[in-house]
Image 1 (tube, rainbow, N blue to C red):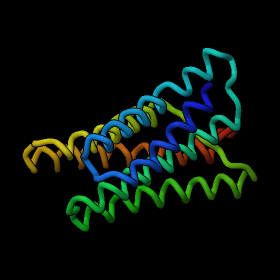
Image 2: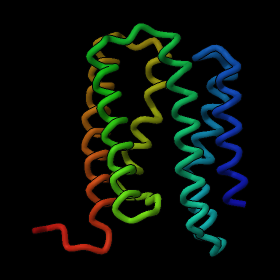
Image 3: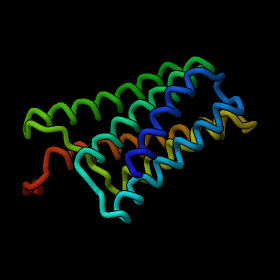
Image 4: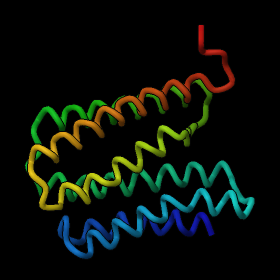
Length: 170
């Protein structure tokens, strides 16, 4: 059941590409994708079916969903160059740490920390907020705050990936 929910998120992400950003269908698919992201891990734990595959499948689904939403939003609104650069740096940090973790441990590692969950929740509100009738200054403040949180989460996740089963305090 948990993997079905995760699969639904992938389908929602791909279908989002078929509809205009901030349209009714976009928001419907976006909310379904967000809900499945919020509950798939809980369902797996409650049913006692937590697997390494499920954790990796969840990460792949998150990536597909996030990239699909980002494509629609980036094509729909004008984003300042500094923000695009910041987002690209965050993505490179995350990808770089995952590659380094794979090189170090010869396996793909995923981290589902509370900070990552908080970051995911904060990032989830961006399309809901940006598509609304809020003043530009409010949108900028929210986006900057979320980018700061996401930057911290990316670095913390990377350190966790590289420090699994090791004493990294030294």
